[in-house]
Length: 489
Ligand SMILES: [Mg+2]
Image (cartoon, rainbow, N blue to C red; front, side, top):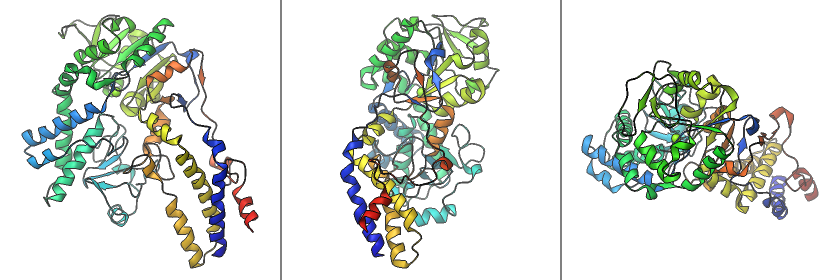
């Protein structure tokens, strides 16, 4: 026991060595590679629109929340008391799972395990013992997990929120759950989930959001000039460009007018609106249809996709046939890892780039001295636990238990759910799928401005588990934890 206490006391002086690595910070404008990829081979650049070319301010989430909340009250007869709730900007993070039957929002890791401490009913965490009792442990069986696109259809009880637009949806679900619990109202979680989903969908489908954004574009769209700079650079280098978006033409046109200017269509060789992704990538039956500037639909059969014209719907098979843009010379950017990128990677062999705006904030935190300290401490602590666990007497075990609790670090990123990319000690489910479906990922399209078109992105060669069989015996500054312990004796 004394040995353990002694060990933990001495380890803390590793901290004096840390400033040396603090300087080694990550640039938030870096493009990260999961898979080696060279821009030298990329001739054609494709883009999603929302949150890829057009980045929205937090005002949009507040707007979506408020309209959907009011739809619940007026159309679905939910209690007026809900008016007391407002959008909570930093409540949820993207990629969380929601148990539709149990009304619980939670974070799940790459191995389908629920991260304890991140299970929320309404706005409050559920105690670990209760979670373990409900799920018979922490594992969620594959058949209950969300489907391939993150949906909760066909008997899957979990839904995964992958869209940036789903932040207000998670917030609203949690607020309504909170209201019902606070007032001891008996309600059916499945109905609640469906009603909220429908209300949020109405905000989009009935055009309420589109009209609001069009009416006050400066309030909602940010960093437009950076997207413009990227598109201009690509066009100056003779790259082909296209747009495939689920949004309607009017909305995209207003936004692109703001971001690029009146002649934005000159930059794009093909523009597809209301594409209905992910169906677009899978359903061969849907033909392209011409839309005029005034929004009228034409009935003629489409034999080629022409620059300066707008097309609606269609499908990727037809797109490939008409353009000949196949395989790895095409790079497509989108923010939705499933409906923008998954099918392209798995079926069609285009290169893919994921836009993850959250990266910027997380990297900034990772660059703080506090975080660097914490990581060094965690590594050291984990090494200690691994070595010291063999001391099985109760007093030593109590110390080890204490260290194990100390390893849990989520609140530095988000007090409720932590990082988008990691649970305490594993990658998240989100991370796992990101690394499978995206060749490269970055905080925003503007990161492309830092690279020339000859650049090759190389993934870091991180060791596989069997390639680095021991805990890093060497602290970042090169002094080993074990040798420090030895020094202490
Ligand atoms: Mg998008």
